Amino acid sequence: MLHKTVIIFIAMLACSSSISAEQTDSYLNTEPDVHDNPSQLQSIPILQSLRNLKQLETHAPYVHDLKNRYKVRTLFVESQDLPMVDIQLTFNAGSARDLEIGKGLYGLSNMAAGLMDEGTEKFTASQIASVFEQSGAQFSIQSYRDMFIVKLRVLSDPQKLEPALAMMMEILSNAVFKKNSINMTLSNLQTGQKQLQESPGRLMGIRFYREIYGQHPYAEPVTGTNGSLKKITTENLKQFRDKFIVAQNMNIAITGKLTAKEALKLSERIAGNIQQGEHAQALPDPEEKNTLNIVHMPYDSAQAHVMFGQIGTTRNDPDRLALEIGNKLFGGGGFNAVLMQELRVKRGYTYSAYSAFSFSQSPGIFSFSYSTRQDQLIDSIRVAHKALTDFVRQPIDINQLNEVKAGMLRAYPNSYSSNASINAQLGLLGFYQHSADYLDQYPKLLEKITAEDVQNAVRRHLHPDQLTIIVVSKTLDKAELNGILQSNLQPNANTPVNTTPAIAPLPSKAVPLPVPEADEPLQSQLDKHASA
Image (cartoon, rainbow, N blue to C red; front, side, top):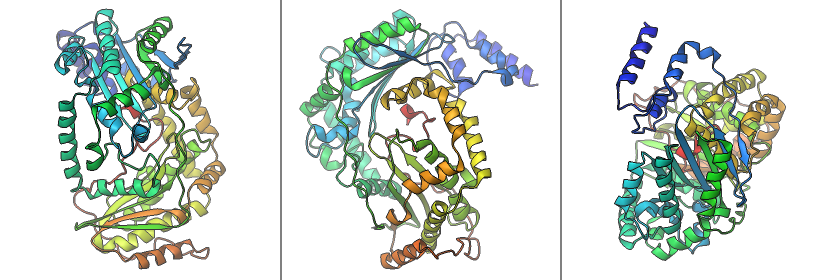
């Protein structure tokens, strides 16, 4: 029956003039990208290979580190299966750079990303959209805390590639940021700000970053605030573009149907046709807190929301992989993780609870969060804090460690399962200055990590006595809560965390888990950062 279904499906694809090669590829790779190109169906052999799934190669793609004469790092992966080219330009120009243009200009990078394709000196927004549409191209710009990412996906046919490429460079160099476009964007963003007030989880995430980072550039939301958005002018946006959207402040990632020589030529055309400039300066390190910090945000809601966290570390820290494993064990690994076991499985205090590390240029964050009923709030916080305290103190279970590592290795090929995911990985490698063979080395590095490595990394970076705790609830006795947490921290506090009596019923409907607004998905380097 399965073979007949596959044969019928292939026949339907072959007979349809509206299904493109890239669409065929998307059925296999679950990619959301759709292109209107009824060219040769080069993915049919991939569909036919479904019968040989066990024989498919799973090794990482070979990454070329091209020597660009403009000294702009370019990573390239050749993929001849589809007549497509993915280009990603990653600038060191995220929201952390907003204040380098002017005081209080939070949201500047994000507004620049949203307005760049709204018009240039030569082309209107509709003309820009028409060029990409006629080329069958997908074009996007997105700002994060660290990065400003420009993506272009287009057919490798020069008649399609050339106009799309030319328009991308026109936008990056000559965006005009008209006043009426700013006003429209400001109106939309302010509407979003009003909706934000109705989301306790998002409010908690914003307050969390402000408490953790203080005066550091990571402290404010990527999207800015009502007050800061009103300050942004056309001149501010042009200053941002001219200072940060420059060749020497970017890296280039290319994946697709090109040779290495063609990719090098393409990268030099990009680097040579954008403004030249300087690399952004290093960001400062945030100031770490050395005591417990409890913050209460009064909010009239049936559910209380809680977030724990602290300053973490950078993406290039040697402990990063060990910390990723540790996070899977504590709160990032589903029902088997410590946090989920203690809060949901044993007590039914919450529907879901997850922890995560955010690794960035400047030290990122470690956090975990959940929501619960108001009457369960205090004890849930006690249990969650005690779970982390015990996790830091107690040795890592070797069997659990091996299971987590095996799961991470099995999931790893998903990070390069499509051209888009490969190119996103190249963008990360280039931005964080990883070696070109990192994708190939990752499984070997992961295999070498021992329980002792994980335990040492956890004890170096996680500090239950230095957490910031944000609580969104109707009321909170901070003195009582502080006493409970201090008791957890005592060396003789050996009371198991599973002493709570009856298991409370789970809610009938899942409560959305509040998460902090982050520069990238708060998971591992395997995730597709560019689509975060």
